[in-house]
Image (cartoon, rainbow over all chains, first blue to last red; front, side, top):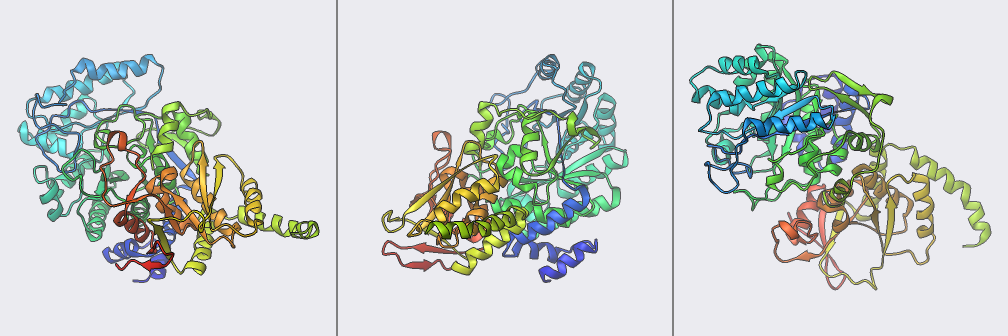
Length: 381
Length: 192
């Protein structure tokens, strides 16, 4: 199908097909694809660009799965670099933020598939965080983790989610989707849940009233068709449940893992993937440019290629940094506001569920970048 | 250029400057890419052996927060140079932002029609942003071309060198035909 015909479909609000998505990936002019994605982005959100104040806790990197793209996991307790936080250590991260009067609204928790921890470790982790900060939103455990807990502890997915929810779970992050194509999963992540199982965890969560995000890992060995197929499967579930809030394309980082001979995706490939995602996923409200993984400059540019969200202030991200990400581990709200304004967009601080926390004059004022962030802006492409 | 000629061209330059400044990012990028393509027919260049005497490159320092008008005024000085430089290379000073950098590239291409080459410097921009600059008027990637890729780890993390294959991948990925400038100055398109 010609680009003009695809543009007509987009403007008429018609869902794009697999062939349309592939054609967008193969269109020689990425600016044209970006322009169309930006049209949709501005139709949905105008200039508004979202971010939140959050922190990450990766409580353990001990993981039974041996995904080839992962630099974070350690197979066994005692392996070099393996760690598991005590509850006190994990809670201490939040206490430190509270003591610093840092008004975070969300904790993002993602872990390895630790074979030796009791289920209570996770419920108590959540409950303790809620005791410290009852209003904090806990976005925790990927579908891969939840499916693993169900199998390991002999419960249904719904039972796992119910118990986690009772302990304080508020929503589910989108990680672990990787690429749904069985051909690719067999080669790069054969020992974690299947695509259908991943989708079913999210379906169950949505049916229980939980919101979630969704992701796609791109840049390993998948084809363009497999990327678009991945998006279509997410779109189909969204048609069914409406529970996804945000789609986050995740670029493969090649350092310190078994796929280190592969090149990283290029900048244009990043922008094109954001643009195609915005055009294919008409029913998912937000597209997030995760600055930790993309780098600040590319993430900012993605705000004109379909993305409307920069994620948050983060702090202590480990998964991508162990894979070679050179971004800082934290940005202040003022720094994020400045990046968004410099892009000609209007910053809006949100909570996890996209309720507005602050905008306009109520937002943090501009201030000079700290030295570590300035350095990262100079080196990260 | 005579004083009267300068006086006469000023209103036109101001009008042109205002017209460019009014364009959004994509419109500016499209015009700049079209200007590049009119001259180079969708080719993107790289070179292993640069001859600085035959191919003088003028750096164009730019700082985040400058207006288009300020940049266009400084570009007018380069535009007036006789003979025109072989190439211009935008050089960020301080904190470059992605979008600001791409806009700067487009302005350079449109304000310097007599300058053949607009170079994207991998050392200053990183390979990702340098590649994006091809969508905004750049026609050449500027980086040492090395025989073998070294892993970019530790102290080598920011090594700007590219292999020939990486340079070709970046140019082709931006939708252009990669073209190598050989030591004798001839141009050789790289077959897919």
